[in-house]
Length: 128
Image (cartoon, rainbow, N blue to C red):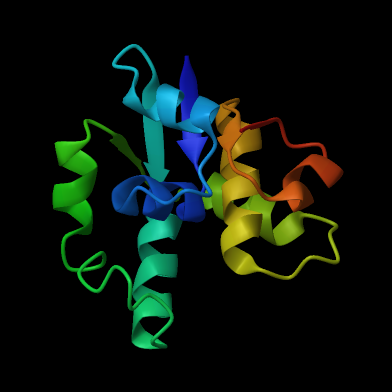
């Protein structure tokens, strides 16, 4: 099984946040599950750290590659196909990070590991 981690799922995993579901924890810990981490999550984390919104994980941007590797997760780059799909989504939801994750989930044909209901409302397969 392959899954694409939403940024909040990744941060909650790294901080052992109680908001993470048991199922999500089990899937992320399962060595048989390939957890993909989007380059968009690195962008979102760096942006939120710059804005002072991630004080509970102050080194997440600086240690991003290291943390992904330590957990055995795989990087998913943003391609032009992902960018075209994200930009072309006919959504009222304007969050560029969510749009990119939705596009990647759809094009890569992998469920999104997320607690965010906006994805389900737009037909994206979500696991939580």
